Image 1: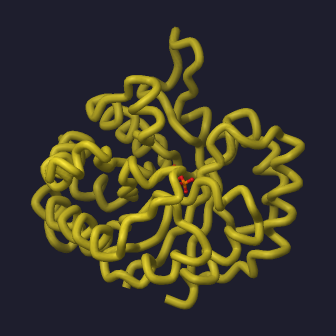
Image 2: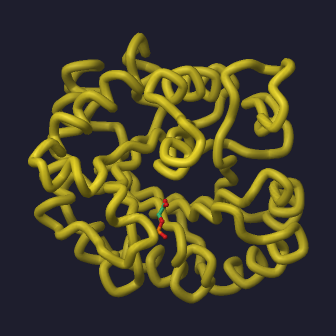
Length: 253
Ligand code: PGA
């Protein structure tokens, strides 16, 4: 049984001061237990404050992106070793908002994920189809191409060390969530492609999160699906109550 991993993607919300307040509220409401992994991904400028506020907690801390070089002339970028030193153990790469607004390609996602692995961070590799692609019946083609390109050249051990997040673009921030059948179809297919790339034993261990309008009232049915091993939560992760209820749903699964 794969342990569920619920990660909050805070996007461009929460200053350091606001981060400390939300982390305190979360810690009070979360009822931490070893049965579910829980993490948060605040903006870069709030990571140090989050780390401090998380002292004594088992919550994981993630960056929202990382560059493939350890340092260099890349204005506006942050590297995996920098995230590691500030106290992150994971990093989101390839989020659809990066792909959509900042020209992120599968090749760049591959390099970012590799750099994360080399620094000992868990990459959360995001992928998913747009509405136009789904409506054209191309969902599985698109997602298959993305997973192969994002994980190209990775050893089975590297694949085993990462997390995949399936996030249909049309479900992100829209309130429109994938149906359980839609989510399970893609998650199951993803596990098959991961098996082609890294072998069945690895594919059986890799966690595949679902993301896109996960809320307290739909989390339980999504998390109960056989190939859904957690969630990447945007909007609902900014409300301590909602996030705690999603984590509780994961604990009951
Ligand atoms: P959402 O965002 O939960 O607000 O839809 C999910 C994500 O972008 O990871």
